Image 1 (spheres, rainbow, N blue to C red):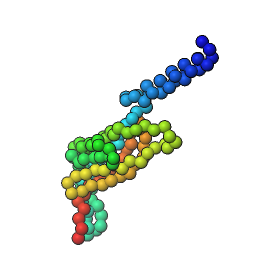
Image 2 (tube, one colour):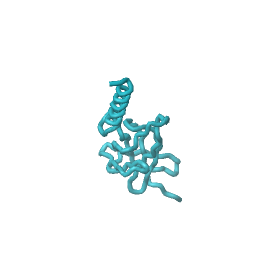
Image 3 (cartoon, rainbow, N blue to C red):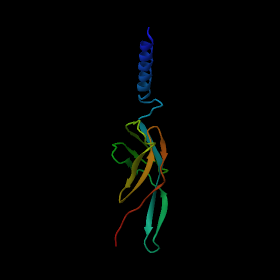
Image 4 (cartoon, rainbow, N blue to C red):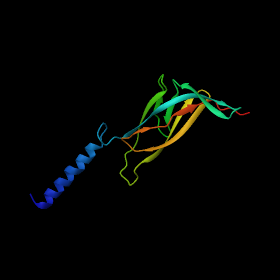
Length: 132
């Protein structure tokens, strides 16, 4: 074998190893997980404060531009994993908008992360929005 053939073979094996690493369930994950809690609240318009009552069960949590959804447990917790495209460009992380919905109310929170991360999202407080 010539030196050129050996270099070509090494490059081919390295490329194959990188592609194999990009498969699902590998260290090069193609998903990102968002975790947090959702609480039920009520706006006290006389004092202009938001009162937090309790964890909110069965709220729906989504991520903008992704089809996956999660429901909150009895303690208000959720774990939402979305499949995303892994890119190898210069950005350290991407921006995601996480939304929590329940009858009469919703809230959106913007977070950053990258595939393979588990992002802890600040608590959502869902309350009915009313206008006077």
